[in-house]
Structure formats: C-alpha cells, structure tokens
Image 1 (cartoon, rainbow, N blue to C red):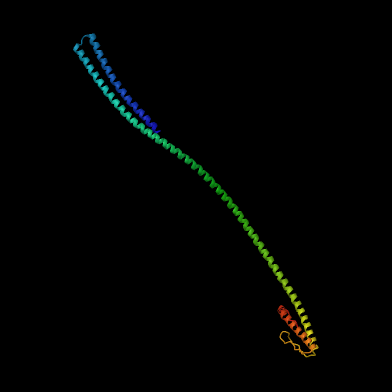
Image 2 (image 1 turned 90 degrees about the horizontal axis):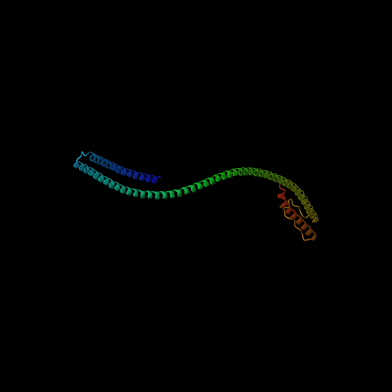
Length: 275
C-alpha cells in the first residue's frame, strides 16, 4: 500500500512538472506568435498603405526580432531549467524507487515472517485446542473416578459394617459356645469328681479291708494308722505268714497313700473319702 502511494506520488509530481513545462512553452510560443502576428500586420499595413517609412519598418522589424530573440532566450532558459528539474526529479525518483524497492523487499520479508508467525499461531491454537480437549477429558475422567470412588467407599463402609456385625455375631456365638463348653466341663468335672470320690472311697475301703485282713492274719500284732499319709507302716517278724501279711499290709498302706495324695487335689470341692 505504501509503495503504491509512493509510485502514484512520483507519477503525479512528474505530470505536474511536465504540465508546468508545457504551460511555459505554450505561453512563450503564444507570446511569440502574437508578436509575429503584430509584426506581420504592421508590415502588411505598411506595404498596402505606404504611409510608414522604410526606417520605421526596419525599426519595427528590429524590435520584433529583438523581442523574438528575448523570447527564444527565455524559452531556452525555461527549457534548461525544466531539464535540470527533470534530472533532479529523476534522481529523486531513482532514490525513491530504491527506497521503495528496499521497502518492498522488507515488506516481502516481513510478509514471510508474518506468514510463518501465522502458521505458528495456527499450530499453537490447534495445540491449545488439543490441550483444552485433553484437560476437559481429564476433568471428566476425574469426576467419574471420584464418583466411582465415592460409590466404592460407600460399599466398603457397608462391607465393614457387615463384617463387624458378623464378627460381633461370631464372637457372641463363640462366647456362648465357650460358656456352654465351660458349663459342660463343669458338669462333667462335678460328675467325674463325684465318681472319683465314690471310686476312691470304695478303693480306700477295699484297702482298709485288706489291711484289716492282714492285721487279723498277724494275730492283732499290728495297729492300724488313722491316716495312711502320715503314719508309719507296721513292722513284720521273720515268720513267713507274718512276712506275707506285713508285705500285704505295707503294700495296701503305700498304694492307698499314693492314690489318696493324687486324688485329694482333684477332689478339693468334694468331701474327702474315709478309710
């Protein structure tokens, strides 16, 4: 746009210069033509009328020649001035053309850079659109994941409550079973203790009978102890029946003491058996 305006301005300046030159030339030629017309008219009048003398006619011709010469000199000066102006204008026009060419080259370079920048901007715009789309997709995915996480968290809490209820129920069942088992064990222990007490009493009674029989076989020489755990065993003489009876008595005494020492802690809640 600027180069086009500069060219138009140069052309307009050249046209105005030509107009001034042609106008000046036309003015000079018009004046010369008018002078020639006046000279010719006077000469014709002098020739036809004869009133004008020859010296006067010559003077008129000389005046006309001087005027024409002056006009020709003025025309030459104007032509030379016009030529000088034309050369100056041509130089200015050349310099302006060079500047215009430089501006045009710079404009072309800038246009190339602008096109490159436009392409880069278009690429950046496309990339920005892609990034916006990716961000929108990420936001949507994040929202979906958050919703799923909330759903899963709700399910997890529900499962935890269910498991806690199941654990409490299982613990209650285990506790009930343990209490029932302990009750069964207590019942069985009471039964077994009662059975042990009866059996131990029967056994001690039988050992007492055995010791009484052994004492009778010794002829009343052996005194019975009140407690098999704290008394000394009876002594025997050297006869065989006495030895046999004493051995039986000692064996019954020792066995009864061992059984009673073992059974007594187990029958702590029961009444101790009597010999």
